[in-house]
Length: 254
Image (cartoon, rainbow, N blue to C red; front, side, top):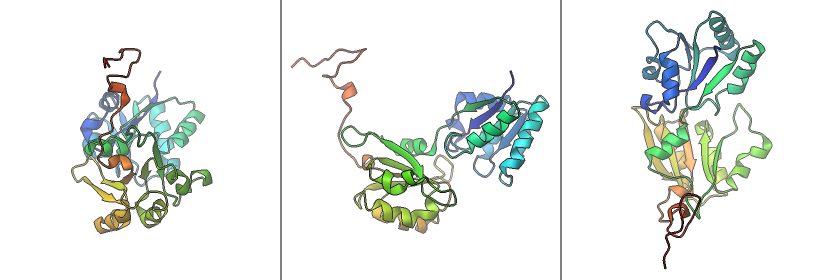
């Protein structure tokens, strides 16, 4: 049965697409894509005969009828999102609207910016004995954050905190975080990570706002605030000689 495919393009680099995403693009009759956030190189993976519809100037109320129309014409429709559609991608609204039209949806995940940023830094965000939790969130802006998810509550965990859509509010973010993290806590600032013009730097928390403004960043910027980004020698027990599990017995002979 035909479905509309909502596909994650990943952080930007074409070779970070999943194989499934690549296959959906190669088979598409219609591409409805976030042209302001997804690279032209990825959009160009569709066949030459594929209809391309950019959405940077469209509202959801304009996008959904396009999806419905092309679907009912028997076309293989790919709705292409940046990153992972499950994160800040208006996914639920689109699925609900299409369900009202009796249209099934397939979601193809993509690598998210926080994963690409950690990989670019050769960093692990869950260090044994230091950090075992990753929080994905955003600062409040035009889209309010629920009271129970306010930044103060999330920061109180002291976890690896990954903030999307927050560069415009970086002064407030830094001020709040300094109440919960030491001022020398490493902060990774990533702009368009994996794109040719990527900028990625680690600064102390006390320089988070000034570094952002010095660089003129206000969109497509991710922050990772985490003690895990500091160098340490702690290792996981999983591969230790004295740790046994289903597939390996302890090798500690002392």
